[in-house]
Image (cartoon, rainbow, N blue to C red):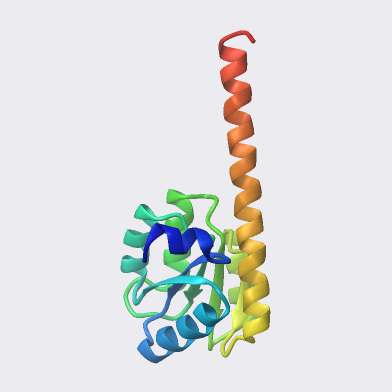
Length: 150
């Protein structure tokens, strides 16, 4: 995907799921709504992509073989604490939802996710990420001013 397309999109989203049909379906539906979408079919692949890109939100499946969603969530947030991650699962439980939020997820949704609700959460994630980015820049300016005595 071209950088210009990402900038013009409503948000740049990474969808992580081991089910190919789900990835294709949700990607197409989000792209039809003006989102730029990237995909990963495993937790390991998601971590590689997160390293090299700035996503507005990440939609992450909880139940995947290998590195599952909860482990991917923890590792991703260790690397980039400002990531906005929405966990999706077909095996929802209150316990998983509470744990996901406690670990730093933006939200926890059940599959099949209502597309309007998911879009709302992605927009919320983008807004939150932009706020965190602005705060970080402001802190950097303050630190530079203090360092140079301005």
